[in-house]
Length: 211
Image (cartoon, rainbow, N blue to C red; front, side):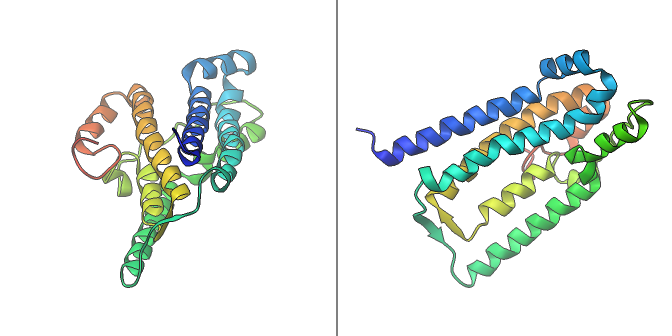
């Protein structure tokens, strides 16, 4: 018989997968095409990224708040001194790498704020500037440093509970799949330049194979 903990883990997994599917559908080419057809190319360039991020955040919050309800906060492991300081060091490195990656990519562009401001100021006229193709700094380490450094911060949490472990595992799996999906769009957008970048730099983790 499946116990209540297993049922709660399965329920959490189902809810997370449902959110991931919604998140992926919002990024799908078909939905973007519908948005363009309904509101125009300029509105798409100006608003879609911001609306997409807001949708992802709003739909994710209930799932995150359910973690302590569905999953026990029983401690799986806890790092003690001196390893505690090592965990904090890696988390600081992860936060620094995350901040640097966001700075390189332009955080406001990543969030969609810059595009929305462009649309308001230009009133939908003109051409939205093309995002830069970045291969320096953390992008020379992995092709998706935002994902990688986020995982470093999560997995070096010195106190790991059952809820945290389930959540971090789900996030890791989602980042892994999400990076594969993003690769297709980036390769289509940047062509041979991105394909050469793929040959030089690993995708998600700073090892050549299999990631």
